Image 1: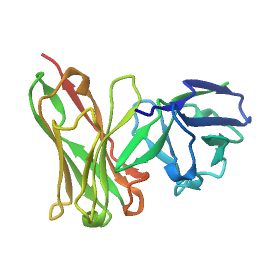
Image 2: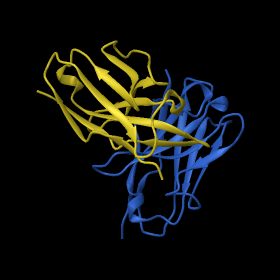
Image 3: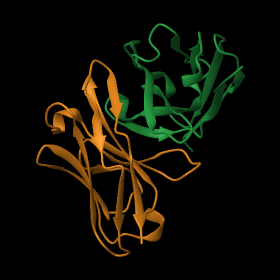
Image 4: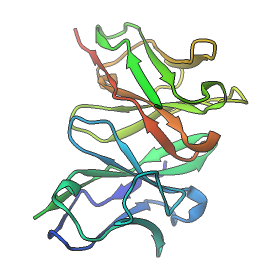
Length: 110
Length: 120
């Protein structure tokens, strides 16, 4: 069974740029997996950031962008702010109605 | 305003059953694809099940297949998750989510969640 992989943790300086990735233990991620990204602060419901690789959800600032980098999906945050410090999850669509979440990345802004 | 409101969570013994509900408002529920996603305490998100809007197809994660049943009542704009043979590892916050654009690919709107605890 394919596992979706994310960096467990990442750190970025305020104002800096960070790229989080979303891969698979078997194979390469492409737009055919319709990668999407979600932000979650502790105790809160997830918030949709990016869908179908690179489309920002309504109200999401353009500091957040999605792409495919090599064999992984990527979420890039530019001009990192203190309230970007939270958990980020990617989801890949595996076909046949099956969606798989990555394990999540805990982003620290310091 | 688009809104999803879950209810029905609580404490249940191992082997027991529970039915979660998700009341939807602010969008055309009958044609929307809806899902349940859960999150165990301190853990990541896990997709549980999806009910397609128009086709009526249902999909389940292997971890719940045969134990959980997703259903909907379009007249009440409500999504359900019937959970049987519950195990300790089913303990989690359960989120209802609307899929984007009637498809199966991405989640668009999330509810606030309802907590399920399976313990004796």
